[in-house]
Structures are given as C-alpha cells and as structure tokens.
Amino acid sequence: MINIFRMDMRRMLRSKTFYICLIILGVTMIFTQMLLRVVSDPQMVEYLNSKGILVSVSNPTGLDNLSLLDVFHQANIGGGLFAVVTGILTAIFVCSDFESGYVKNILSAYVNRGKYLWSKFLCISIVNLIFLLATFAIALVVNVLSGSAFHMNGAADILFFLLQIWVLECGFSAMVLAAGMFTRSKAAVITFAIFVCGGVVYMVFNSILGIFSLNKIMEYSLYMNVANAQSAYQGISSLKPFGVGIIFILVFMFLGQVTLSKRDV
Image 1 (cartoon, rainbow, N blue to C red):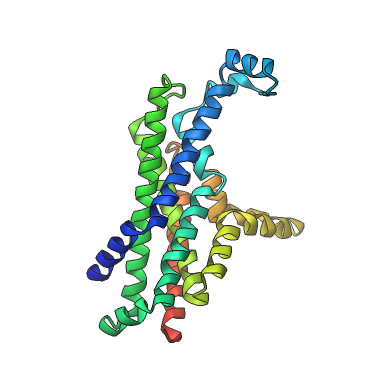
Image 2 (image 1 turned 120 degrees about the horizontal axis):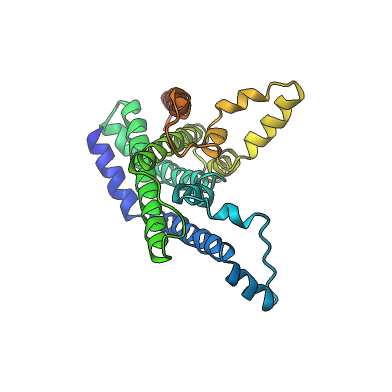
C-alpha cells in the first residue's frame, strides 16, 4: 500500500491539474479578500460610486468584525468551491487509472483491491491538506500585506477549524472515489462532484424532506456541516462535524471497495 501511495503522490504532484486547481483556489482567496477589503473602506466605496461603479454595503460595520477564518470560510469553503475543485481533481485522477490501464497493472502486482482504494484516498487526503494549508497561508499573507484588515484568530482556533474542514472535505473525497469505482467515467464522476459537493443535491433533498418536516436530517450532511463550520471549539457539540466526516469516509470507502471487488478492471 505504501508503494502504491508513493506512486500516486508522485503522479499527482507531476500533474498539471493539481497546480491548476491550487491556482484557482488561491486566486479566489485573494479576490475575496481584496473585495471585502474594498467594501469595508468607506472612502474606497465613495470613490467607486463617484466613478459610476455602484457599491452598496447593507451592514458595513459588520465587516469590521470579520476574522481571518470567517473570510477564509466565505471565500472557498462555505459555498462548496473547495469541495467541487478537489472533487473534480479526484474524478480526473481516479478515472484516468481505468482509461490508461494503470489500475490493471497495479492490481496484477498488488492483488488486494482494498489497499489500492485506500492508497487513493490517502493521496487525495494529503492533497486536501496541502490545498487547505496553502490557501490559508495565502489568506494570511494577503491579510498581513493589507494591514491586517481582518483580525487574527488564535492558533488553537485555526487548528480546530482546519482539522474540522479537512475531515469533512475528505468525506466528500470518499464519495467521489466511490462514484469513480462505480461509473469509471470522467464525465459522470465530475458531474457527480459538481452536484454533490456544490450543494445541489443537498438543496433538492432538503426541499423534499422539508415537505414531511424531516429536513432536520440534513444537519448530518457533509454540505451543511461545511457551510456551518465553527471557527472555535465550543463544547462537545463542536465535535459533530468530525463524527459526520468520519462516518461518510467509512461508509463510502466500504461501498467503493465492494464495488471495485465486484467488477472487472
């Protein structure tokens, strides 16, 4: 399994898609920070309005209370962009194995298909962590260069938030991996990643369950927990996202392993 993981990481770090996805998340982070910095400055808003660029802020004083984690969450995490980007990367990476015949070569040497699947998950999990740390580092640097427009969170809060998001994003990755084992089609798995990770499936199910007053179930969905991620530990209830993420990982990795073992490669 370690050898497969090393090969996967080598292939991942050499792929252009990895860097394109990282650039997309980095640029989005910078753009969001700059935009919030502009609209939080009354003089800049007045200047833009005088130039014919209409900028309206309903609650400008609220922007002063934003922390760096709040901005980080709004930019890439809360709306599902991070999950969609990493989901598309996962879809391309996994389905390429089947298209190129790489998976046949690997499984002829390593018979245990479970180890193959878990090595893929471990690789994507590391990629999720790299993306999280890199984009947060970008947010931190931009914030310092802009005069610390958004107040800094404590180190413990930052660690708690990033670990929480990492576990939840790995849950999304497990779902995309399972879909890849089932369809083995880039187009199908990318579509799945966009609809599931982007919150479309969540909104549909939430609306349907709302008719029967059962939409409270959606509080245990990955998308809801990512959207409502807490920026600090506030008691035992703050650990719920970790439990949700771990359950999704175990369930969908099991489904992916069963699917892979039942089908020819």
